[in-house]
Image 1 (tube, protein in one colour):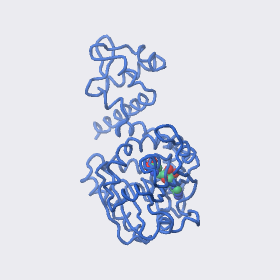
Image 2 (spheres, protein in one colour):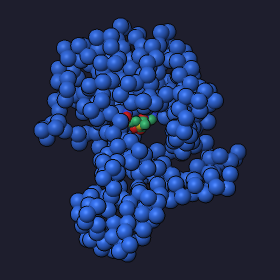
Image 3 (cartoon, rainbow, N blue to C red):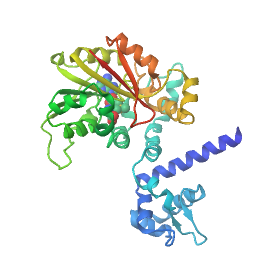
Image 4 (cartoon, rainbow, N blue to C red):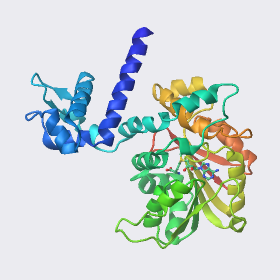
Length: 353
Ligand SMILES: C[S@@+](CC[C@H](N)C(=O)[O-])C[C@H]1O[C@@H](n2cnc3c(N)ncnc32)[C@H](O)[C@@H]1O
Protein backbone atom coordinates (compact mmCIF):
# COMPACT_ATOMS: atom_id res chain seq x y z
CA UNK A 1 0.00 0.00 0.00
CA UNK A 2 2.86 2.42 0.67
CA UNK A 3 3.85 2.30 -3.00
CA UNK A 4 0.26 3.03 -3.98
CA UNK A 5 0.09 5.92 -1.50
CA UNK A 6 3.27 7.34 -3.00
CA UNK A 7 1.81 6.98 -6.51
CA UNK A 8 -1.35 8.76 -5.36
CA UNK A 9 0.67 11.67 -3.97
CA UNK A 10 2.69 11.91 -7.20
CA UNK A 11 -0.52 11.83 -9.24
CA UNK A 12 -1.94 14.60 -7.05
CA UNK A 13 1.13 16.80 -7.54
CA UNK A 14 1.12 16.24 -11.30
CA UNK A 15 -2.60 16.92 -11.48
CA UNK A 16 -2.07 20.28 -9.78
CA UNK A 17 0.78 21.10 -12.16
CA UNK A 18 -1.47 20.22 -15.12
CA UNK A 19 -4.10 22.54 -13.67
CA UNK A 20 -1.57 25.38 -13.43
CA UNK A 21 -0.49 24.78 -17.01
CA UNK A 22 -4.10 24.74 -18.21
CA UNK A 23 -5.07 27.94 -16.38
CA UNK A 24 -2.00 29.89 -17.47
CA UNK A 25 -2.03 28.57 -21.06
CA UNK A 26 1.48 27.17 -20.56
CA UNK A 27 0.79 24.05 -22.64
CA UNK A 28 -0.48 26.18 -25.51
CA UNK A 29 2.59 28.42 -25.20
CA UNK A 30 4.96 25.43 -25.45
CA UNK A 31 2.98 23.99 -28.36
CA UNK A 32 3.22 27.25 -30.26
CA UNK A 33 6.95 27.82 -29.92
CA UNK A 34 8.51 24.37 -29.72
CA UNK A 35 8.70 20.99 -31.46
CA UNK A 36 10.78 17.81 -30.97
CA UNK A 37 13.29 19.35 -33.40
CA UNK A 38 13.17 22.74 -31.70
CA UNK A 39 12.92 22.36 -27.90
CA UNK A 40 12.75 25.58 -25.86
CA UNK A 41 14.01 27.00 -22.57
CA UNK A 42 11.63 27.85 -19.70
CA UNK A 43 12.41 31.53 -20.24
CA UNK A 44 10.98 31.32 -23.77
CA UNK A 45 7.82 29.60 -22.49
CA UNK A 46 7.51 32.15 -19.67
CA UNK A 47 7.93 35.02 -22.12
CA UNK A 48 5.27 33.60 -24.46
CA UNK A 49 2.77 33.01 -21.60
CA UNK A 50 3.49 36.26 -19.74
CA UNK A 51 4.79 34.47 -16.63
CA UNK A 52 7.89 34.51 -14.39
CA UNK A 53 10.77 32.34 -15.64
CA UNK A 54 11.64 30.85 -12.23
CA UNK A 55 8.13 29.53 -11.61
CA UNK A 56 7.75 28.22 -15.15
CA UNK A 57 11.11 26.45 -14.85
CA UNK A 58 9.97 24.55 -11.73
CA UNK A 59 6.68 23.73 -13.45
CA UNK A 60 8.54 22.38 -16.52
CA UNK A 61 10.87 20.37 -14.29
CA UNK A 62 7.94 18.84 -12.38
CA UNK A 63 6.00 17.80 -15.48
CA UNK A 64 9.10 16.55 -17.31
CA UNK A 65 9.92 14.30 -14.32
CA UNK A 66 6.29 13.14 -14.45
CA UNK A 67 6.71 12.35 -18.20
CA UNK A 68 4.02 14.84 -19.17
CA UNK A 69 6.55 17.11 -20.92
CA UNK A 70 9.73 16.04 -22.71
CA UNK A 71 13.19 17.34 -21.71
CA UNK A 72 16.72 17.01 -23.11
CA UNK A 73 20.18 17.31 -21.50
CA UNK A 74 20.27 21.04 -22.20
CA UNK A 75 17.14 21.40 -20.02
CA UNK A 76 15.04 22.39 -23.02
CA UNK A 77 11.40 21.27 -23.24
CA UNK A 78 8.71 20.27 -25.75
CA UNK A 79 5.47 18.33 -25.89
CA UNK A 80 5.58 14.91 -27.57
CA UNK A 81 3.49 14.89 -30.77
CA UNK A 82 1.14 12.21 -29.40
CA UNK A 83 0.38 14.38 -26.33
CA UNK A 84 -0.22 17.68 -28.10
CA UNK A 85 -3.96 17.34 -28.59
CA UNK A 86 -4.64 16.08 -25.05
CA UNK A 87 -2.73 18.96 -23.45
CA UNK A 88 -3.87 21.83 -25.65
CA UNK A 89 -7.55 21.22 -26.44
CA UNK A 90 -10.46 21.27 -23.97
CA UNK A 91 -11.14 17.59 -23.30
CA UNK A 92 -12.74 15.79 -20.37
CA UNK A 93 -9.58 14.54 -18.53
CA UNK A 94 -7.78 17.87 -18.90
CA UNK A 95 -10.76 19.88 -17.65
CA UNK A 96 -11.32 17.40 -14.82
CA UNK A 97 -7.77 18.00 -13.57
CA UNK A 98 -8.44 21.74 -13.72
CA UNK A 99 -11.80 21.37 -12.01
CA UNK A 100 -10.32 19.40 -9.11
CA UNK A 101 -8.83 22.56 -7.65
CA UNK A 102 -12.25 24.18 -7.67
CA UNK A 103 -13.94 21.30 -5.91
CA UNK A 104 -11.03 20.92 -3.46
CA UNK A 105 -11.00 24.60 -2.50
CA UNK A 106 -13.22 24.18 0.58
CA UNK A 107 -11.48 20.97 1.75
CA UNK A 108 -11.12 22.24 5.36
CA UNK A 109 -14.85 23.07 5.49
CA UNK A 110 -15.62 19.64 4.02
CA UNK A 111 -13.60 17.92 6.74
CA UNK A 112 -15.71 19.79 9.30
CA UNK A 113 -18.88 18.46 7.58
CA UNK A 114 -17.75 14.87 8.17
CA UNK A 115 -17.72 15.43 11.94
CA UNK A 116 -20.86 14.51 13.91
CA UNK A 117 -21.25 18.01 15.30
CA UNK A 118 -20.03 19.73 12.09
CA UNK A 119 -22.11 21.61 9.49
CA UNK A 120 -24.67 19.69 7.39
CA UNK A 121 -22.97 20.58 4.13
CA UNK A 122 -21.54 23.37 1.98
CA UNK A 123 -23.01 26.27 0.07
CA UNK A 124 -22.20 26.65 -3.64
CA UNK A 125 -20.52 29.98 -2.86
CA UNK A 126 -17.58 28.31 -1.06
CA UNK A 127 -16.58 26.78 -4.40
CA UNK A 128 -15.56 30.24 -5.56
CA UNK A 129 -15.17 29.69 -9.32
CA UNK A 130 -17.63 26.80 -9.59
CA UNK A 131 -19.88 28.44 -12.21
CA UNK A 132 -16.97 29.15 -14.58
CA UNK A 133 -15.55 25.65 -14.20
CA UNK A 134 -18.98 24.02 -14.53
CA UNK A 135 -19.46 25.87 -17.82
CA UNK A 136 -16.05 24.71 -19.07
CA UNK A 137 -16.91 21.20 -17.98
CA UNK A 138 -20.38 21.29 -19.58
CA UNK A 139 -18.77 22.63 -22.76
CA UNK A 140 -16.48 19.61 -23.09
CA UNK A 141 -19.25 17.16 -22.26
CA UNK A 142 -22.13 18.81 -24.18
CA UNK A 143 -21.04 21.15 -26.95
CA UNK A 144 -21.20 19.25 -30.20
CA UNK A 145 -23.16 16.36 -28.63
CA UNK A 146 -26.45 17.75 -27.33
CA UNK A 147 -27.90 18.59 -30.73
CA UNK A 148 -26.31 15.87 -32.83
CA UNK A 149 -26.61 12.97 -30.41
CA UNK A 150 -28.49 13.56 -27.17
CA UNK A 151 -31.74 14.96 -28.56
CA UNK A 152 -31.99 12.23 -31.25
CA UNK A 153 -31.22 9.64 -28.53
CA UNK A 154 -34.16 10.89 -26.45
CA UNK A 155 -36.50 10.00 -29.32
CA UNK A 156 -40.31 10.22 -28.91
CA UNK A 157 -40.47 12.86 -31.68
CA UNK A 158 -38.97 15.48 -29.35
CA UNK A 159 -36.55 16.73 -31.99
CA UNK A 160 -39.44 17.31 -34.41
CA UNK A 161 -41.44 19.08 -31.69
CA UNK A 162 -38.44 21.35 -30.97
CA UNK A 163 -38.14 22.12 -34.68
CA UNK A 164 -41.83 22.98 -34.94
CA UNK A 165 -41.73 25.21 -31.86
CA UNK A 166 -42.48 24.32 -28.24
CA UNK A 167 -41.98 25.85 -24.76
CA UNK A 168 -38.99 24.41 -22.89
CA UNK A 169 -37.74 24.82 -19.30
CA UNK A 170 -34.13 24.04 -18.29
CA UNK A 171 -34.10 23.53 -14.49
CA UNK A 172 -30.73 24.23 -12.79
CA UNK A 173 -29.50 25.77 -16.05
CA UNK A 174 -26.24 27.10 -14.55
CA UNK A 175 -24.52 29.54 -16.93
CA UNK A 176 -26.95 28.71 -19.74
CA UNK A 177 -24.80 26.60 -22.06
CA UNK A 178 -27.55 24.09 -22.91
CA UNK A 179 -30.17 26.80 -23.40
CA UNK A 180 -27.77 28.58 -25.76
CA UNK A 181 -27.12 25.44 -27.82
CA UNK A 182 -30.80 24.49 -28.04
CA UNK A 183 -32.18 28.00 -28.60
CA UNK A 184 -29.78 28.59 -31.48
CA UNK A 185 -30.56 25.28 -33.15
CA UNK A 186 -34.33 25.40 -32.57
CA UNK A 187 -35.29 29.06 -33.14
CA UNK A 188 -39.04 28.28 -33.29
CA UNK A 189 -38.98 27.06 -29.67
CA UNK A 190 -38.97 29.26 -26.58
CA UNK A 191 -36.63 28.52 -23.67
CA UNK A 192 -36.67 29.45 -19.99
CA UNK A 193 -33.55 28.72 -17.90
CA UNK A 194 -34.03 28.64 -14.11
CA UNK A 195 -31.30 28.43 -11.49
CA UNK A 196 -31.09 29.19 -7.79
CA UNK A 197 -27.70 30.91 -8.09
CA UNK A 198 -27.79 34.61 -8.95
CA UNK A 199 -24.21 34.46 -10.25
CA UNK A 200 -25.06 31.63 -12.67
CA UNK A 201 -28.09 33.51 -14.02
CA UNK A 202 -26.09 36.73 -14.43
CA UNK A 203 -23.59 34.76 -16.54
CA UNK A 204 -26.43 33.06 -18.45
CA UNK A 205 -28.03 36.40 -19.33
CA UNK A 206 -24.86 37.32 -21.20
CA UNK A 207 -25.10 34.37 -23.61
CA UNK A 208 -25.36 35.34 -27.25
CA UNK A 209 -25.91 33.52 -30.53
CA UNK A 210 -22.73 32.45 -32.32
CA UNK A 211 -23.01 35.53 -34.59
CA UNK A 212 -22.90 37.74 -31.46
CA UNK A 213 -26.55 38.82 -31.63
CA UNK A 214 -29.04 38.54 -28.75
CA UNK A 215 -31.52 35.69 -28.44
CA UNK A 216 -35.20 36.52 -28.84
CA UNK A 217 -36.43 33.10 -27.66
CA UNK A 218 -34.61 32.87 -24.30
CA UNK A 219 -35.35 34.01 -20.76
CA UNK A 220 -33.35 33.36 -17.58
CA UNK A 221 -34.88 33.39 -14.11
CA UNK A 222 -33.41 33.13 -10.61
CA UNK A 223 -35.54 30.65 -8.70
CA UNK A 224 -35.73 27.56 -6.55
CA UNK A 225 -36.66 24.43 -8.50
CA UNK A 226 -38.52 23.24 -5.42
CA UNK A 227 -40.88 26.22 -5.57
CA UNK A 228 -41.31 27.50 -9.11
CA UNK A 229 -43.60 30.39 -10.11
CA UNK A 230 -47.35 29.68 -9.73
CA UNK A 231 -47.96 30.73 -13.34
CA UNK A 232 -45.82 27.87 -14.67
CA UNK A 233 -48.53 25.22 -14.02
CA UNK A 234 -49.09 23.00 -17.11
CA UNK A 235 -47.14 25.43 -19.29
CA UNK A 236 -44.04 23.61 -20.64
CA UNK A 237 -43.99 20.99 -23.39
CA UNK A 238 -40.53 19.85 -22.35
CA UNK A 239 -38.60 20.16 -19.07
CA UNK A 240 -34.88 19.42 -19.06
CA UNK A 241 -32.50 18.89 -16.14
CA UNK A 242 -28.86 18.64 -17.16
CA UNK A 243 -27.03 17.10 -14.19
CA UNK A 244 -28.97 19.29 -11.80
CA UNK A 245 -31.24 16.84 -9.99
CA UNK A 246 -28.88 15.08 -7.56
CA UNK A 247 -27.16 18.36 -6.52
CA UNK A 248 -30.34 19.71 -5.01
CA UNK A 249 -31.04 19.34 -1.32
CA UNK A 250 -34.65 18.37 -2.08
CA UNK A 251 -34.78 16.80 -5.56
CA UNK A 252 -38.15 15.37 -4.55
CA UNK A 253 -39.67 18.86 -4.21
CA UNK A 254 -38.06 19.76 -7.55
CA UNK A 255 -39.51 16.73 -9.37
CA UNK A 256 -42.96 17.40 -7.85
CA UNK A 257 -42.71 20.93 -9.23
CA UNK A 258 -41.52 19.61 -12.58
CA UNK A 259 -44.62 17.40 -12.63
CA UNK A 260 -46.78 20.47 -11.95
CA UNK A 261 -45.22 22.73 -14.60
CA UNK A 262 -45.02 20.25 -17.50
CA UNK A 263 -48.13 20.11 -19.71
CA UNK A 264 -50.30 16.97 -19.68
CA UNK A 265 -48.59 14.67 -22.25
CA UNK A 266 -45.45 16.84 -22.01
CA UNK A 267 -41.99 15.30 -21.61
CA UNK A 268 -39.28 15.49 -18.96
CA UNK A 269 -35.65 14.56 -19.66
CA UNK A 270 -33.06 14.31 -16.88
CA UNK A 271 -29.37 13.71 -17.59
CA UNK A 272 -27.30 12.39 -14.71
CA UNK A 273 -24.14 10.58 -13.74
CA UNK A 274 -24.71 6.89 -14.36
CA UNK A 275 -24.63 4.51 -11.43
CA UNK A 276 -26.44 1.39 -10.30
CA UNK A 277 -27.13 2.48 -6.68
CA UNK A 278 -24.67 -0.22 -5.56
CA UNK A 279 -20.99 0.61 -5.13
CA UNK A 280 -19.85 -2.98 -5.70
CA UNK A 281 -21.65 -3.13 -9.05
CA UNK A 282 -20.36 0.34 -9.97
CA UNK A 283 -16.76 -0.71 -9.29
CA UNK A 284 -17.25 -3.72 -11.60
CA UNK A 285 -18.97 -1.63 -14.28
CA UNK A 286 -16.87 1.52 -14.35
CA UNK A 287 -13.45 0.23 -13.23
CA UNK A 288 -11.07 2.95 -12.06
CA UNK A 289 -13.49 5.66 -13.27
CA UNK A 290 -15.81 4.63 -10.43
CA UNK A 291 -13.41 6.22 -7.91
CA UNK A 292 -13.48 9.46 -9.89
CA UNK A 293 -17.28 9.42 -9.97
CA UNK A 294 -17.70 8.74 -6.24
CA UNK A 295 -14.84 11.15 -5.43
CA UNK A 296 -16.48 14.00 -7.37
CA UNK A 297 -19.65 13.30 -5.45
CA UNK A 298 -17.86 13.28 -2.07
CA UNK A 299 -16.03 16.55 -2.80
CA UNK A 300 -18.88 18.55 -4.32
CA UNK A 301 -22.29 17.03 -5.12
CA UNK A 302 -22.88 15.43 -1.71
CA UNK A 303 -21.95 18.48 0.42
CA UNK A 304 -24.03 20.92 -1.68
CA UNK A 305 -26.95 18.50 -1.64
CA UNK A 306 -26.73 17.99 2.13
CA UNK A 307 -26.65 21.57 3.36
CA UNK A 308 -29.84 21.55 5.47
CA UNK A 309 -31.32 19.25 8.11
CA UNK A 310 -34.11 18.19 5.72
CA UNK A 311 -31.75 17.54 2.77
CA UNK A 312 -31.93 14.13 1.04
CA UNK A 313 -28.10 14.00 0.68
CA UNK A 314 -28.24 12.13 -2.68
CA UNK A 315 -24.75 12.70 -4.07
CA UNK A 316 -24.14 12.25 -7.79
CA UNK A 317 -23.79 8.45 -7.46
CA UNK A 318 -27.31 7.96 -6.11
CA UNK A 319 -27.78 5.79 -9.19
CA UNK A 320 -30.58 4.51 -11.38
CA UNK A 321 -32.52 2.66 -8.67
CA UNK A 322 -32.79 5.60 -6.26
CA UNK A 323 -33.35 8.15 -9.05
CA UNK A 324 -36.22 6.15 -10.61
CA UNK A 325 -37.78 5.56 -7.16
CA UNK A 326 -37.77 9.31 -6.49
CA UNK A 327 -39.24 10.11 -9.91
CA UNK A 328 -41.99 7.48 -9.37
CA UNK A 329 -42.71 9.01 -5.98
CA UNK A 330 -43.14 12.42 -7.67
CA UNK A 331 -45.85 11.22 -10.06
CA UNK A 332 -43.81 9.90 -12.99
CA UNK A 333 -44.97 6.27 -13.10
CA UNK A 334 -43.01 5.25 -16.19
CA UNK A 335 -39.37 6.26 -16.34
CA UNK A 336 -37.35 5.15 -19.35
CA UNK A 337 -33.65 4.76 -18.52
CA UNK A 338 -31.15 5.00 -21.39
CA UNK A 339 -27.36 5.08 -21.49
CA UNK A 340 -26.16 8.29 -23.16
CA UNK A 341 -24.21 7.34 -26.29
CA UNK A 342 -22.61 10.78 -26.55
CA UNK A 343 -21.37 10.87 -22.96
CA UNK A 344 -20.25 7.49 -21.61
CA UNK A 345 -20.77 7.37 -17.87
CA UNK A 346 -23.96 9.45 -18.10
CA UNK A 347 -27.57 8.33 -18.20
CA UNK A 348 -30.88 9.70 -19.48
CA UNK A 349 -34.15 9.46 -17.56
CA UNK A 350 -37.08 10.13 -19.89
CA UNK A 351 -40.66 10.45 -18.65
CA UNK A 352 -44.06 11.75 -19.68
CA UNK A 353 -46.72 13.42 -17.53
C1 LIG B 1 -24.06 20.52 -11.67
S1 LIG B 1 -24.72 22.09 -11.96
C2 LIG B 1 -25.37 21.86 -13.60
C3 LIG B 1 -25.53 23.18 -14.33
C4 LIG B 1 -25.99 23.07 -15.79
N1 LIG B 1 -27.24 22.36 -15.92
C5 LIG B 1 -24.91 22.45 -16.63
O1 LIG B 1 -25.05 21.30 -17.07
O2 LIG B 1 -23.90 23.12 -16.85
C6 LIG B 1 -26.18 22.09 -10.95
C7 LIG B 1 -26.95 23.39 -11.01
O3 LIG B 1 -28.15 23.25 -10.24
C8 LIG B 1 -28.39 24.47 -9.60
N2 LIG B 1 -29.28 24.22 -8.44
C9 LIG B 1 -28.99 23.54 -7.30
N3 LIG B 1 -30.05 23.55 -6.48
C10 LIG B 1 -31.05 24.21 -7.12
C11 LIG B 1 -32.39 24.54 -6.80
N4 LIG B 1 -32.95 24.17 -5.64
N5 LIG B 1 -33.11 25.25 -7.70
C12 LIG B 1 -32.58 25.63 -8.89
N6 LIG B 1 -31.31 25.36 -9.24
C13 LIG B 1 -30.55 24.65 -8.39
C14 LIG B 1 -27.01 24.96 -9.20
O4 LIG B 1 -26.98 26.34 -8.92
C15 LIG B 1 -26.19 24.57 -10.43
O5 LIG B 1 -26.14 25.61 -11.38
